[in-house]
Length: 420
Image (cartoon, rainbow, N blue to C red; front, side):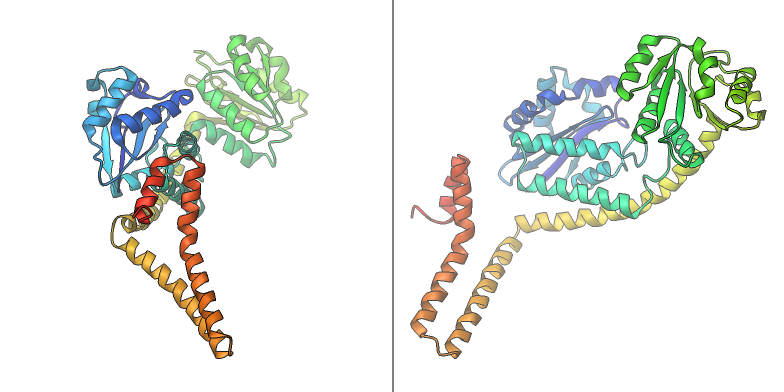
């Protein structure tokens, strides 16, 4: 039994290449079945995200998964020349493949070190492979062990404890300043990618109310629908500023949108209740002089970059611990896999049978010592031994028959010498 992990990611290929071999989630099931046949592998799963596309394959000893087969199938499936992606392809076998999968699930191979989203995407890949019938014992066990490793890393290290994006850092800072975000009112200025991420983090933290101000209402409305936010124009900011406990801005404006005078008027209406403001724009959206006002806590993107740099260093230290956990768990899985490939399986089965025999034999001896009829004791021993040894094969045969797995039935009949 052998395991292969093959793919491309943000380190080896630009987005122009990655998008060419990404997989549509709605067509993944048919792609998995097609790959099983074309590549001639025993089990398969596909992980496809914006930053990576990876194929996880299991081959039996009788089959050989070659790079040529995989490359040919990818080119055929996506209808593109193989030369498009071959230079970006990486290939891992056995222990290296297992280690790679575990590192991916833990966020150790991500664009943002320790990011948690990849674990959810790995679970989705597992569920899709399970539903399509392309997964069996080895791949199932590997994914389950991988999820366990990711959980252990999250629990025992600080790999995901610190904010490492400006959007997440801004929301994290707000959580430290306010006792609870559930009653806070937020004004977001802009509707670009950064503000969209800020809105997502705020929504996940159950913030009280969000208002989005943008020059183009249609773009703001699209984002607002997803988080239940209100939408206003930039011209309406002065009249709505007093309602905001938190103001976070990121636009492409060349001039400040929020001036000192606007904030002073808002503070007067708020009766000097403090305001937390974050300016993520370059050039600035909020006038520098706003920081001089009492009751205003203003942070710029440079302030957050300092926090992020420190947090990244913390994650790098945690990553060393995480790598050690992954290496240990990789070795553990490979030991289990070798047990499927070697005499260990025979030894394990024999030991299991001998243990069952010894338990029943000891019970029979006790019955004989208590003057129970020897013939009855022998009959009971024979019946229980027979039932013990027939249980697993009988269950397997019934399961194969109920599932219409004729190949498996033939295989089981051959193993148990039924036709001879």
